[in-house]
Every structure is written in structure tokens, then in C-alpha cells.
Image (tube, rainbow, N blue to C red; front, top):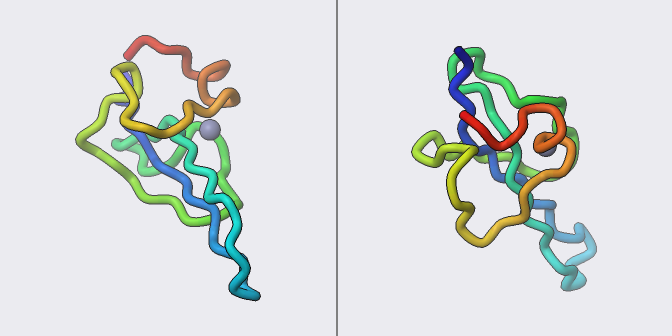
Length: 74
Ligand SMILES: [Zn+2]
């Protein structure tokens, strides 16, 4: 059974140094396989192995694509 944890994606700051709103999105991450539910190509991704995907999120947005693919149950 897959253990889904959370990978948090933070979009990189504008290289020109302008202040842009930082989108912080939580993705489902398969900790055993070492990969997310779908390829994440934007921004910087940090895996939060201590957070279960199915449980409450701490201030980031839940990815819609992951929610459709993985669902909310562990
Ligand atoms: Zn996602």
C-alpha cells in the first residue's frame, strides 16, 4: 500500500528580483517510491515526510491534480 506524504512546491522568486506572490502548493508524494503522484516541474519541491497527505494541511493549498488522482484517504 502506498504511503502518501506531502511534497510542498514553492514557486521560485522572480529572477529579476521583483516581488511576486509565492504560490505554495501541497502535492501527494509516494515516500516509498520516492516520487510524487505526478511530475512536478515548476518551482522548488520539498518533501515533508512527517505530514500525511490525508491529514490536515498546514497553510498550503492542496493540489487538485493530486486530489483527483490519489484521493484523500491514506
Ligand atoms: Zn499535485
